[in-house]
Image 1 (cartoon, rainbow, N blue to C red):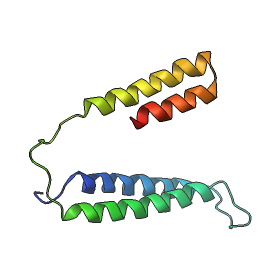
Image 2 (cartoon, rainbow, N blue to C red):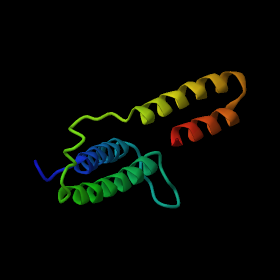
Image 3 (cartoon, rainbow, N blue to C red):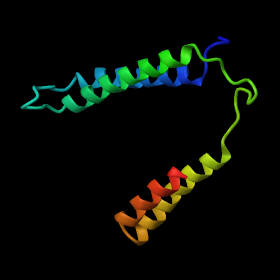
Image 4 (cartoon, rainbow, N blue to C red):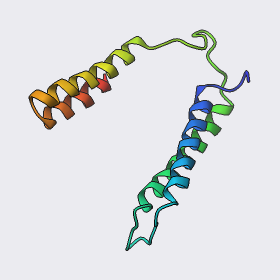
Length: 111
């Protein structure tokens, strides 16, 4: 486990979520490209998510983990921006509407 970093674990998580979307979406009618069923989009997104997860996991196998930060080093600025953007979306959505709230959630969480 010394040569596996967080990219590997993130890729595996994406693979699991993608396969879950594929299996759950295949319960619905998939249809064809010209006559899409309700399961077409979840299956397609699940396949793309699985492929992306495989690529990310493969790229993370050879990289050594950065041991200077330790196993858990939270990024407080990121956490505060994401939580703040959700709070701003709720408040602005209630009082100003969807457009300013959507702009605020995207802009603040991008910080």
